[in-house]
Image 1 (spheres, rainbow, N blue to C red):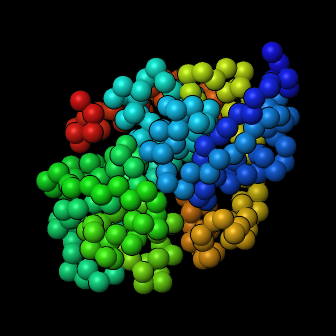
Image 2 (cartoon, rainbow, N blue to C red):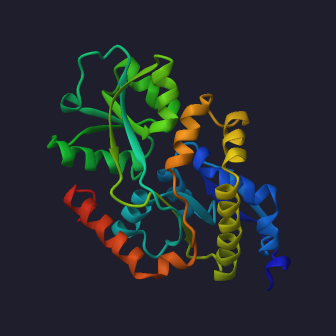
Length: 284
């Protein structure tokens, strides 16, 4: 069956943050259709990569764009036959901000006991193990809080001591005085990948990857338009142009989405990621 005669709609899960701008451009400019993917739907997952994994396993979505550590952890702990990494998306590391409540003036990273996470297996969960390893902390107690708004509420009402979320998404709430910045931790690996369920045909994956690559190329050539989209979007929570410009300067999207995951440097990345996650106690 050709792609243009597919009877079913390809469902693509994504996190509605600034990192999704190349996907937005690819859709807006018709790059997916030109790549042969006519029937598709983007499904937002503000709850993050852990929720994406759950939906991939349930076949509620077919393709997902999410955080490297969450998917490597999932594949390494029994999900290998259910989905796989089929492309790189962002090759620069992610800057995770560590946040606490605005009233917790004396709390330091060393004092953290209770951590809020969006989902078990999410990036906010996995990276907390790396944080504990780097700072020599005892295992944390976790509270699953689903989304960023609940995580912010949790540190302010005393349910949790801290949570971790992407820095530029968090910074607006530092500036407004809603939460307090404790510090940062960077992923020691490229930050975003594309995954697909085992049931998804290779031709569909190829069409999506080719359309996404064109969206990335457009963003790289038109960063001013990407910045304007982020600032003007009703669905994105950013209002500081300087912050968005700083993010755009630092982020590096993959220049070879599909082929990169079949090359030795990517295999080295996966091996290193597993080593760090194993040392941190995330996987065995």
